[in-house]
Length: 113
Length: 112
Image (cartoon, rainbow over all chains, first blue to last red; front, top):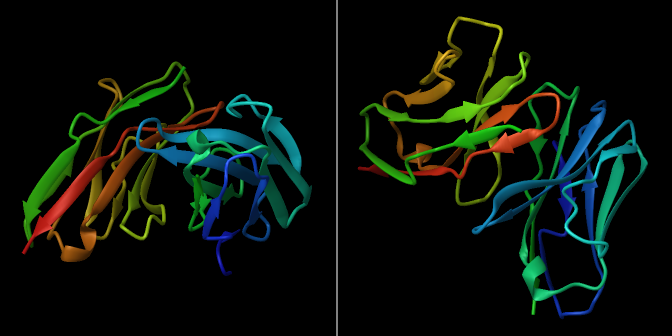
């Protein structure tokens, strides 16, 4: 398997623009997670899905953030409108079951100017 | 709520030597897993080792092993025969019924 795939790897955008991050989980994994990593706050869970259904979105910082999983092989994290404080590395991860190791994608480095 | 604490922001070790990274955690759950992840400069998060809380035997993966002290809620990682490729940020993490919680990380430097 190719592992978890994320795109783009780098994204630079201006404040106020819409940003969409994409993730393809490992085939057969029922859980998908979105994380954000910053120097100040470390790694934070934003939201996770089980069988394409959002289970816990309590980590989503604001209404500007939204995530979808239209099918088992694709998920998006959208920020609209983006702000400089959203600059971070965003990771997608997937796992077979909840209490099991998560496999991370390479991350998307987002810079909002 | 789960918490994970890594008290060593930075560690360094001579190549071929052994180093131990510390981690303590707190959880009220009876069923949980503990992990060590490695993040090299490429920023890819790589699973190093995992430990099921119900298992008393310490997990090992080649040069990596853990010292799991359940009563003390301690979960340290030992790296034997350190190699230059081991240089990275190391994150301890705990997963219960709620979510995977990470520590703040320890930056490991390998001195040739």
